[in-house]
Amino acid sequence: MGVVKRICWETNGLVNEAIMREMARVSLVSGGIVKIDWKAWSPAVYQALTGVDGWKAFERIKRNAKIVAEMARERREIPLLVVSTLLVPGYVDAEEVRHIAEYVASVDAETPLVLLAFYPTHLLQDLPPTSKRHAQEAIKVAREAGLRRVYVGNEWFLKDYY
Image: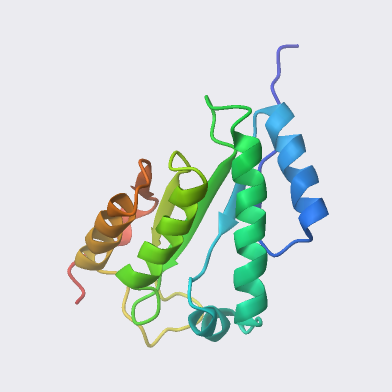
């Protein structure tokens, strides 16, 4: 029938390493992707945003991102790994992004990083949406860290809030 079914996973990156390997394998052969939503670099910030043990999360995400990035070398035309980071004002600043980008670039500089604007619709309603300046700084530091593919995923939210 000519139908292509790509298997794409959107994860927080905290799954068991064996499961992450299998997810990546299925995406690799189907032409899909594995997206890891990397909340923050600092364990304290990660824990504040998620309630999850920040240190354990930090170590697991680093290992899982490396697993998928290494498998991604088998298929370059469609990225296997995509990392996304939500730019939460007051929490996920340029330094958080810099560290995430440096780690990802050290594993594979071709890995796309998608920066997402925060918009207070559910939790953290006391925070403003992400400003244009915040996003521009994050893009700049991610590129300086060595990543070649840095994008803003929902730039229509960006305005001059702060």
